[in-house]
Length: 375
Image (cartoon, rainbow, N blue to C red; front, side):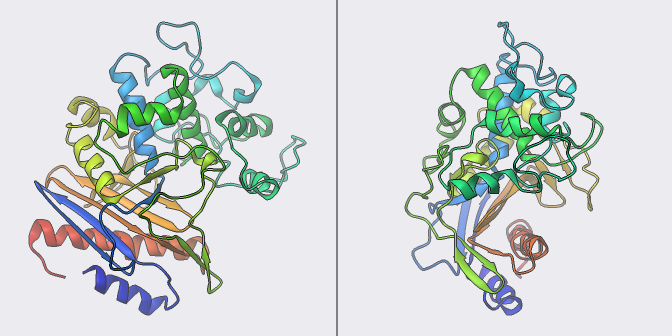
């Protein structure tokens, strides 16, 4: 099936330089297949899972909530239980629009209205006199130093400086990487550990993920071996983008993992056999609200519902495109990734690749496994 999927996709995009890998867990059985990534490919190969990281950040927040160390219904200006400290620092860098009206749950569900500085440009029309007007802030900084280490404080300071927001908290949905940067900061303040240390010690290793890591420094740009290189096809030219500065993506996109690790994590977590209780998973995490987009999907706490496929997330970071989903009814988990972006037609061709190549292969794998349908 994946061989055919890749052949069909390359028939449309002849210069496509990547392949596809897919891992399935069904009951007590697991299956791994790959195509176009070499003969030595295995389920332990490393790749960048990008925004699938958000499910891990949400898991950490819900774990702290489950333990009574924070309250997801609290506002970010409220004090951390048992302390006199607010969830976010009382410093100018966090004086973002509508600060006192944002709850942790709003951030988890992308309903806080926090301006997403990683995916947006800073409008020329803002009154603030900043040198990065009309530019994407991350690109502005990387042009000066490709190894610059971004911090939570720095990223939120851009939102505070510019005064940008999408809407009043709780009134709408808008995906925001920067909103998850705030959650990363909250994890650090509540746990009194770095984001990476807390996640590794309380989520990743306890869940049996031995091939996963979370780079945080601008100089930590490599992917551990074994890995597959990442490519971008742009203007019919192939670029190798395997190495990457992930420091701006901490807590929202910095996870490096393997198909085995990611499918194990999702199947255990959403079946209530992970670090979160079945109650927390079902009543909080999987409680998905409509996003206003096309289809019957929704978004919960670091988790989206993909119609007829299951609960999970997708991820996109230059050179790597991924999707993970879990269907509790059929006890079916699928993780798939591609090691190339088709960016010939900008975001449109990338979305088409995600839906009609990667996601389509996941649907076909579910039909094969759960219904015995051959494709």
